Length: 128
Image (cartoon, rainbow, N blue to C red; front, side, top):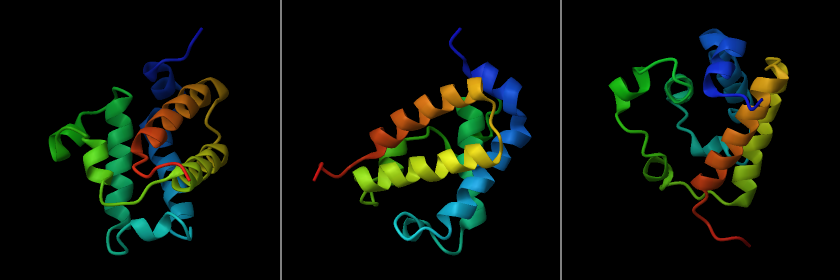
C-alpha cells in the first residue's frame, strides 16, 4: 500500500516533523553551498516556516496558510540561484535529517518522493 500524508503524520506526529526540520536546519546552518541562501538573522523563522509548511502539506495544521497565505514556492525561492547542485545538497541534508530523527521507512518513502518533486520544482537554473 502506498503511504499517504496521513500515514506520515501518524508515524511522525507534529513533534517528529518539527524535530526533522530542526535536524535539517542544523545541517544547513553550516553548509557552504545552501547555507548562505538563508538569512543569518532569521534561522528560527526559516525553521518555523518549513515546519509549518510541512504540517500544512501533510494536512495536520493550517498555521502556514494563516500566517503566509498560499505557499507560492517558486516565487518565494526565485531570488536564489537553485541548480542541480543546490537541489541535490538540499535533498542530502534532508535525508540526513530524516536518518537522524529515525523517520519510519513507510513515512520516509512518501517524504523522499515528496522532497524530490519539490526540490526539483524549485530549480531555476539550467542544467550545466
